[in-house]
Image 1 (cartoon, rainbow, N blue to C red):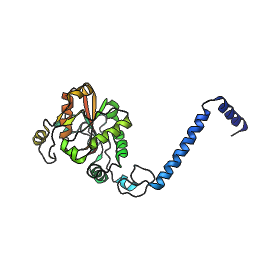
Image 2 (image 1 turned 90 degrees about the vertical axis):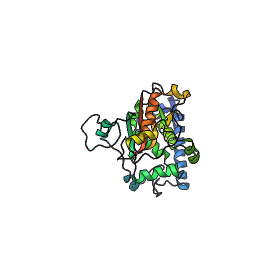
Image 3 (image 1 turned 30 degrees about the vertical axis):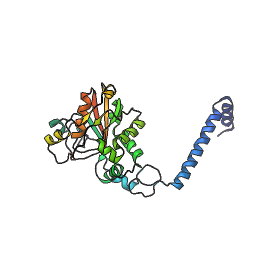
Image 4 (image 1 turned 180 degrees about the vertical axis):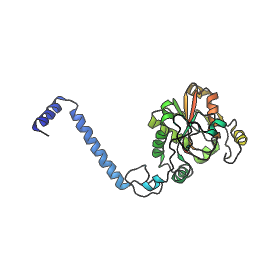
Length: 272
C-alpha cells in the first residue's frame, strides 16, 4: 500500500463516524472465532452418521456423504422420482399420468437408503436431533422451486397416540428448520390427523386409498391460513405417496390453491 493510499484511508476513517463501529464489528467477529475454536476443543465436530472427527459441525464426513443417494434431475415433476433421461423442459412420468396424485409436485433430498435411512431412523426413533440443521439446509436446497412459490409450510401430522409415545413430530421440526432458512411461515397445526394408519407398502391402490380415507382434517380456526394459499407439506419420508396425496386433498378441500410436498427421502420404487 502506498503512503498516499494509507493517508487517504486514515482521513476517511476520521471523517466516517461509522469507522469505530466497523472496528468493533471486526473485534466481535474475532472473539466469535475464538469462542468457536474453544468450543471445537471441548465439543469437537463429528460426522453425524459415523461419528468420526471432521472439520465442521452439522455435517457428514466425505465417506458418509458419498453414501447418500441424492435425488438429482431429471425428475418426474409430479412424483419427484428420478427419470432415466432428460427430454428437456417439464417431464411427467408414465406412473403420474396413469394415476395422478392429489398433490401438485414432490421434491425429496435423497432416496430412502444408505446413510439417509440411518440418519432418519436415528432422528425418528432414537430421539437424536443432531442432524436437524443439516436436514434443514438439504430441504431448503432440494425444495427451492417449491419454496419460492410457497405461502406457508405445513408439517405432516402424527396421530395423537404416536405423538405422545414419541414426544415430538419429526415433520414439525423439519418444517421449522426449513421455514427459518427459507423465511416462510409455518402453520404447525393447520393439518391434524384423526387416527393412525398401517404401513402402506405392499397394499393395492384401492387398499391404500381406503387406508388413508378421512384420516386428515383442517381445524376450522386454520382454514383462513390455508384458503387461497400455496402450501408446501413437509414430511420425512414418502413411501407410496398415498398419505401425502390424502393430506393434499384435505388441504385443497379446505381451499388451498396448490399443495406441493417436500421430504427428506423418497422410496425410489414407490408409486402414488
